[in-house]
Length: 203
Image (cartoon, rainbow, N blue to C red; front, side, top):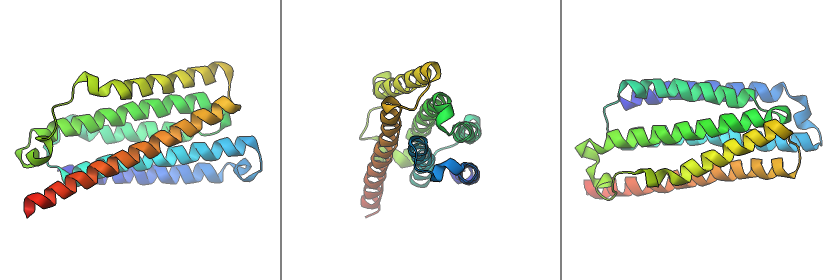
């Protein structure tokens, strides 16, 4: 059953990438030597990494763990698609506040989805070799994600109030990009660890 959700998400991700590509083609100033173009390219990079990270979360969980999906699991991909489209639609130096707002909400959503999948997977005994090593998550485990969400949304509000385009905007966009790279690296580490443990179990 998780593979059905993965198929659904893959369709949504493909549409998101197509929308991103169309948005880029309709923005001729991307190929100009300007400050706005520089900011826009960083935005595009962070957006692309966000789409990749969402795919990694879903695909690694679907391929590695077994769990019985619930109704909410079938709704999550549509919510992800909705905020991905909002993120892409708000690309551009003139919508930086809205972009960061969508970015923060999408980050919070995928964090919650990942936790939801893990919670259901823990209840399946076939995943015990992995989950027996970890205590169930508590609110304390979500403190970093909560702080990140608050910071991102604060940046969004500041940019909506004061506009963007300066060094603050550049640092904020670079921070968003680094955040996505860090999460991709973390997901890769967890994937490698879980796979090695699965192989050890088979041996």
